[in-house]
Length: 252
Image (cartoon, rainbow, N blue to C red; front, side, top):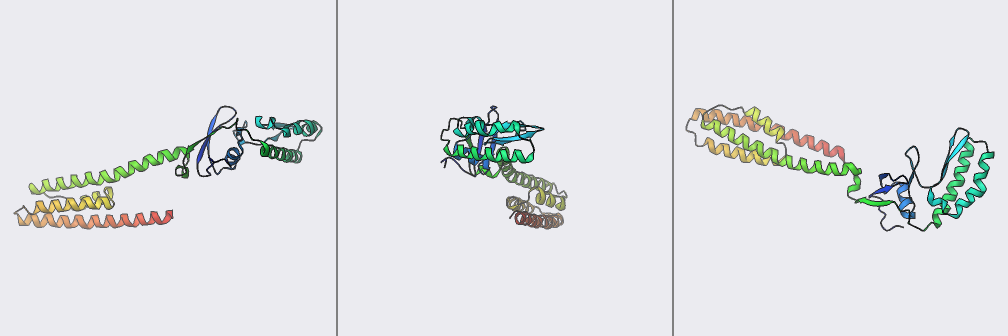
């Protein structure tokens, strides 16, 4: 068996027309091509094939005979014994099926003795790890994964910094702030364990700022808003945990 063959890898092929296409190693055609050194051909409908076959076209047949097969003794048998009978045969589904059985047998016999790799058309393009996705998607999904990871870290950090600075500025100016709105913002846009870490840091920073305020009435009101913030954020965080658990369970 071809040592480079990997059923989980992706391979790029070039057909007889010079067109390229990519297929995974567990495709039967790919396995036949790589392990037996046979090229993959493309018919007029864009379908891929390796072995010779015929198809009905009204009262006639169209023969798809790949070049590699023409270099084998089995092709001579087809040309000299079987093909001459076609003009004298009624063309219908049954006769086409019989002829294809003959061509299939000859093709496989020829493949067993076909040893040259001169027609080798493939190159291994993707590793086993990448093969779990389609060739184009594997690249884009990887990029999106990196982007999502970066955003999921940066966004909560920025949000927590803005939250802390905004509340501390209002505390210095003895202004009111909305604990519900900030709780929702941090709980939704900064959801997750990373977001929780930044929220805790921001919360501690705000509490230290409150300790410097002498106006007890304002401090009491501000602490009440911070308690509201904690409750709203906690509800959002619990919701994030539940949704994450459902997504993980459904993907298993």
